[in-house]
Length: 440
Image (tube, rainbow, N blue to C red; front, side, top):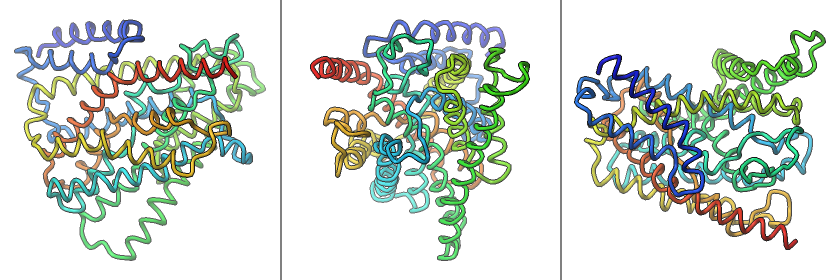
């Protein structure tokens, strides 16, 4: 494909991506669905035949592109969440109840369920089946815009429901957004566990070391780096003594991108999980001056960058689908993908939020309709592609072509199913909540 053709197609795609959110806002059609379809059309062009889109030949490139895309999305959702988590407030922790349930119950059950399917149905080795479960377990902060919170609410907004009807008490969008922000980092310990088992000789001592460092240590380091950097950057942006250093007053929103890169780099340098550091840094920066309009400016920059990265990933994914990415998909992969989206995630999500659930009138409580939505809308996406590429670049993966076909097919199924159902389902729940609020 010539450079001129690439420029033309990218320009056309960017135009489509710019218009899509306005056109598809109230219909059962999501922008990711259209972008994947557009990529598939590009893949059918004669010029595309010269492009090598085999994922096995581009581990490093796929890892870095998807890694940066997820990082940008994590920064965006961290800045967008209006429900602050005050570490010393028990009431604040309770308002996050659905999130803790999804992380501590749904995610391990999903990993176990998919691993069991991979071992029992697909006939994978236990370590490969575990890797498949870890890769497909995290929900996605990139492709789930229809079921996530909107822009951050600040003091310059007169009506707290101005953001496309998303208010700060929207428990569904909050739970799904915070879950996506945190479980992208919390999938790493299980990916590492699968890689350690693949390397052979995994003993009880190795298990203790994995639990102590990969589960507890690296999580703690990542969170600590995010908290410290977020606090320091927040003080600089909003409370610096020098007017030139007080970026919130200057109005320079690129601090968000600087925070993203610094948090990720610092956490990885000291051995922590960079994904958790970025999300924690974003939330800490958001909390440093919750109502300042600078929060919206930073979020706007990140949101535009996220749109560009998502455009690139989805176009290439669509093109790869018509260039042989699904060539190794068989009935086993279809069963795993369908079972995850239709059974494993909904059941695991429902068990997490419905069993011993908090009363819907209490902090962190959900009614039955909200529980069903939170359980069902676990969107799979770019994070799964990253984890598979990361694993493939660190260890030889048996059945790697099949894994790529299965993971890609799962992402496509999730994009289609959740894209079609999200708009009408969320509109219905929003309407019901509005009527309830009016009546109350």
